[in-house]
Amino acid sequence: MILHKFKNQSDLDRAAADLIIAMVRAKPNAVLGMATGGTPVGLYQEIVKTYQSGLVSFAQAKTFNLDEYVGLPVTHQESYRNFMQRNLFDHIDIQVANTHVPDGNAADIDAECRLYDKMMFEQGPVDLQLLGIGGNGHIGFNEPDSQLSRGTYQVTLKEETREANKRFFNHIDEVPTQAVTMGMGSIMQAKVILLVVKGQEKAEILDRTLNGPITTQVPASLLQTHPRVIVMTDCDVNYKVSY
Ligand SMILES: O=P(O)(O)OC[C@H]1O[C@](O)(CO)[C@@H](O)[C@@H]1O
View 1 (cartoon, rainbow, N blue to C red):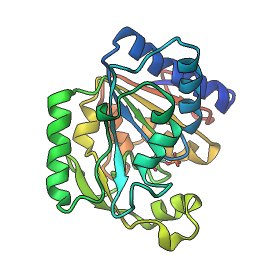
View 2: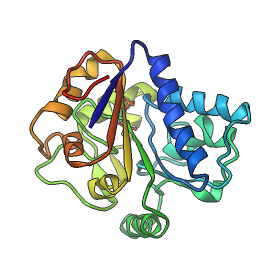
View 3: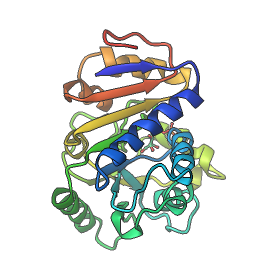
């Protein structure tokens, strides 16, 4: 892993956006793994600005999102499909048919998970996977556990994750208890991973991710075994390869 530290979040957003844009300019039909939550909002805004300047096109790009809530209608502001449309897809020239978010309302969620894996297998591998990190070390919605799943699956969210995400809802009771997420195996197959970590409150989990033991109890620590992970952060944290 390589750690890039930034003085502030706007510099970080710009650098993360630039990396994604560089990938798409070098490979117009790149497959991008996308993330949601608070972390990527600013960098998506930077991508939109560059697109509006005419410096990049996503017309041939494909995307696969990490996860989606189960049972939240796509019309709900906080469904991850809705998030992606509002924050990125509606503002760039990507073809909607080339954007993929797991269907958390599928009648048969298991079948939906297998379909998502099949599409990723056929259209992948992901060239660049963007990740945020949960306060408990989750990536995608792969929560700490005694074992982790390889492919896409339905997960019960930890209470701390629902607590953290309640800021996006009116009340914690509205935060779904279940989600569909890419498994760790799918995430680890990406050629390059960009982990973005914002806010000093995430410094401790980032330190455990970078420097702690590799354990399923900190899913992000498995990234230590991936050959090409770039971490961008504004946290004050130490690592052997940092800039
Ligand atoms: O960016 P946030 O809102 O802190 O969330 C952390 C991570 O947890 C998730 O909400 C779960 O997938 C991600 O979207 C995000 O990267």
